[in-house]
Length: 319
Image (cartoon, helix red, strand yellow):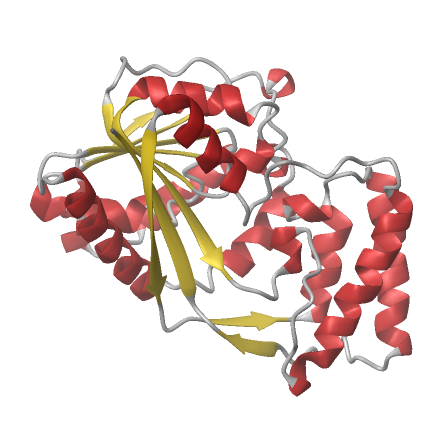
């Protein structure tokens, strides 16, 4: 692996990534994200490799960039899976906590996997909205996953991706109807009977949140909805798009004690958008009282298990 520490001035960063400074928010996100275990990550990466090869009509020597690489949830298994085809994976993140976790994960890999990614995974600490140290059309594919909603201007960011991408900009998201902490919206969907308490919790949360953010403008992009970004590429850049579903044997285990901590620290962007810290703290206290009133056991804290694992990969290819 090649590592380049280009430490930016964190106070001057324009993105709103909470994991730059808050190790608490980072640890909360990490516990949730780790439910996509490494075996499932490799299955996802294998399917992504296959779809990239089909879309670009070649199998080998792809250069792939993931802005917002985080702890390598996507990039690390992609580097392992792409090894037989001589893929080179690049990535950056503006949170040193994330990069340090990525390095810990690399260190804990079996020796055989470490050898596969030697020299094939290049990462650094870098602000996505600053200058990128890459030439024009340097990458065959740029993967965007849970990053656009952090940016001050996602259109300028996509212009930059278009400049540095030779062929393809790919959007990856998890399709998971009950994760309101990611979508920021409360959809009108039926809940299984054993998950009604989760439904009622979030319904009450969003009623309270809407009172606090009366003048807040709904963002154009959310972690799970990037259709505006795809439309922008199609209309202004002449891309063609194809979207593909990827199913995984994945289950989510949701605990109310952790949800309350997410609200308190704004561990997921929609739980932070439109709210300042005192408002988040007020919501946390209100929701904790609701949990106690509804006799939901925080002490026992048995998780609600939601069995679903589906991802969508949308490939925007230059025509």
